[in-house]
Length: 567
Ligand code: FES
Image (cartoon, rainbow, N blue to C red; front, side):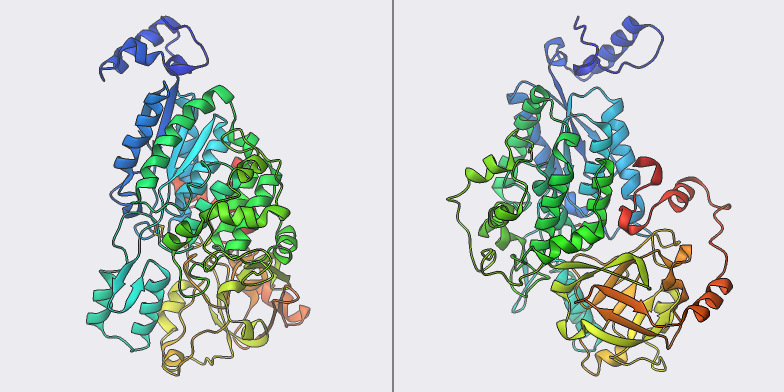
């Protein structure tokens, strides 16, 4: 009988008060699955499986899991898959962000409590990758991420289409009356036609890139399309690597450090990646005992050129093109002079060693630009500070309209999502294209739990006048596939009495992307009056269960919206 106390299948025994009985019971049940004793003596690799029929982005995971298992078995390990919570963007109410931390807790505790020496984290759709990295960091066992990969594009008439930048493009046309109901229904059937995550540089692809930039995936694997044979090969190689990881003993906390977090920010900026990436990376950094300071984000943004022209940046290229163009490796090689090259990666190579082995790799310069000839000289995201956002806000300038960057406007305020839904298309709404539309009470502690509602729809009457973009602001988030001059994550949020709660119709607001400022131009005496009249903070005494846990412990956007007790 194996007598390893802290490794293999007999680690972490159930507490019956009789160790030998615990072993006897565990093996009796394990053998019911047909395992040989010799197999149970192997090093154990858990596979955190997020397949779910509520998550179409992960519908290919059963095939991927078989490949991971082949790799683990070939390398001498015992592969044991286990299910965790799975999160999809469109099948969760009120939104998936509310459950990211729950998935992180589930992942952490199941890695810790079950007898495994290492774990393969299989994620893809937006919140799953950050949740798994957060959980694995806290669990502290060796872990490797396997990304599910993006969808392939499809066709609608003459258009090449992919979720979900094109989802929004067509929906805007429908709202403007440019296409009819029959046509939008036809589009609906063409937007998502393969397994995998959204086909553009949305949040899922951004988080995949961040996972590779942090060193938590095998090199070159983050952007492989979901249905590509290379994805299966990457899955098998990840299984092999997971067994090797047991020997090296490298844990996520040794890979995710302040330096690798900064590398990941550089990659996020060079990709013009999702604004959600800032929140998730802050949460991951927090679990590793590191920080993602928004002032530092701006310093890095000033010195990190935008290199990748993948939608919603530009109007031509999708993730499958980005993969064929060289993927994250090509971006990392361009950024080399700006990166911390001495950081450790999952293969026990430093980043310098990884990149040295890839110098001759092909790059398609139509999609990934050289450092010396970037799309923009600065990064795609910038943090704003000022009297409207004392703790910061984010704007994705690479997907915004530069002519709106330096502007003062009149506030048109919606006090909640319901208020906005009720009035946005009202012909009597007093709004012009020069106004700033403000959405309040959509932050993390609101009842909506920070939905992706920051992409406020342009009022129908303005759409019909041909207005394509206008300044919009909120304490909400925005899908990584969305675009427009949109200020997000305003902190502190309205639900805890942040200045955004004090904005009233007709107030003047000044936005300066150049100066990184966002100011409410109302005098302090008037603001003090409004503050005193604010309703008391939302009463959470009637809440129960997870709802109560979330609403009372979730932190603000600059802290990654993690639970305060998980840092
Ligand atoms: Fe899953 Fe976009 S909905 S990645």
